[in-house]
Length: 178
Image 1: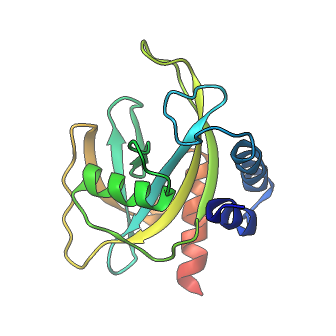
Image 2: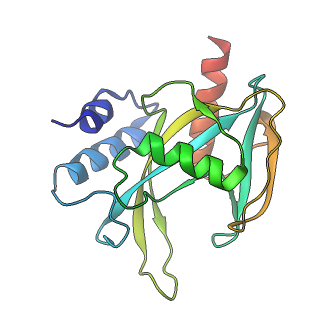
């Protein structure tokens, strides 16, 4: 069994929805083929994303994704040869924000499966997203990439979004109180 499969299997979901996402990712990992292959549309492919906290752990870094027109955490697809979703999440965070964030833990922080709508060059498909919690160095100032319309540090209380985003933010709040 692979290290990734072991880490996903050991992940403790926050709720029944995340448990269903974990089970879907495990089933997908057991189906064979390259799970990171971006051309794998049925049902989809693995992605890695990063919830980047400021050094004081009071704010979350969000970007306004140009193609999806939504505020999201940094993340995305593996490059050719990448097989570690943490490495994908760290690279994507650096490319999309300019910040060399480091992992708080090497284990997945959250698991989410969501639909990416069809575009002219891609059919609708799933992103089976393996999410990590990262920390920015003190004084880090983000810069938006060409993939984003805007980027900013957002206080936890001000973060909006879909159920997956809100679940992750609640997990961050709980962890910071511990």
